[in-house]
Image 1 (cartoon, helix red, strand yellow):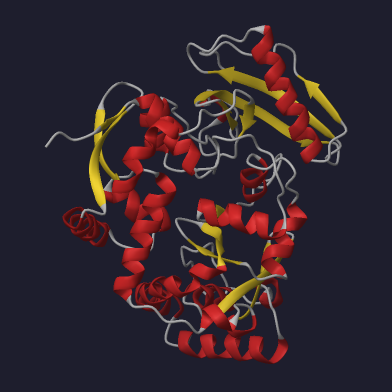
Image 2 (cartoon, one colour):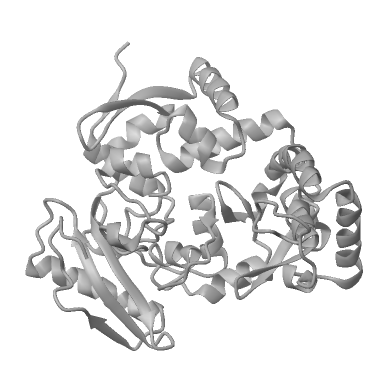
Length: 405
């Protein structure tokens, strides 16, 4: 039987639609509407870098222009509609998914127990008990509450003191949860005081979690390989994802498809059987420019972004300044269904001004007056979001595609 083929334009549109980027960034962005958006994405990565906006805030703002950071803090810290834990990295996750994280808790416990016990010696169990008892008796704590302690030897985890290691271990294994962040510092409390009982007490089997993780990942990606399904939540192994694909193909729940990349090459993937018939209705993304987070879920898999959009994107934080082609932390820019460039900008003067240092268009992207005007309109929106009253541009800020800063 002939395997269906998705052309690159259709594949891009479907992928962006699944990531809430094929529609105007309008509508409410607080309360249930914000919770629904996070559920649609699956998770929102948390990151500490704040040259313009933190990753989780920029991810949400790029999809809802009315979004403000206080809305996420309320949703997570007070309404408890989300919780913070690990996917491929620290992320904000819908709290309804918490029962499936028990598989991660169990696997992290087995993986980390021996490693951290070896680093910190036989007293590690006692340290876990001491920290857990301290939290139970005194309420939320952060690592700074134990700042007078230091690790006795280099551990490979930034020389964490034993109590910091215990906090992280207890969080990763589900006994503690992040109740809020003060600034960017995690505050830990007992999971029973953070996660609502309605989801905390629900139990699911490992098989149910594997089925949920793979089907939910596929729904949010539109199409995927086995490896991409496993990597989406980082909850299941590639072998488990492969077994799920084999079973779902046999059941007729999914079908194989060939996805055309930006270079014309085909990549065998799978998608839900009932999605093929609706490909003609996939919306065309609006032409407006969007500044995205470097950790946007649509771009998190750098290899996939390059295959699908022809966009080679790397953060050059660890590249020596003399060898950087771009600034060390630049923001991708999307126009319609095309990645058109990357921009280097940061807030200055106590966040009263947004300074635009450079924009590098992708090869073949002509920066005519109309496109520059659309980009400047998005920059002005970004400045308002960051609370900046002024925008400044470096001389010759629109660079040739191949030029170095």
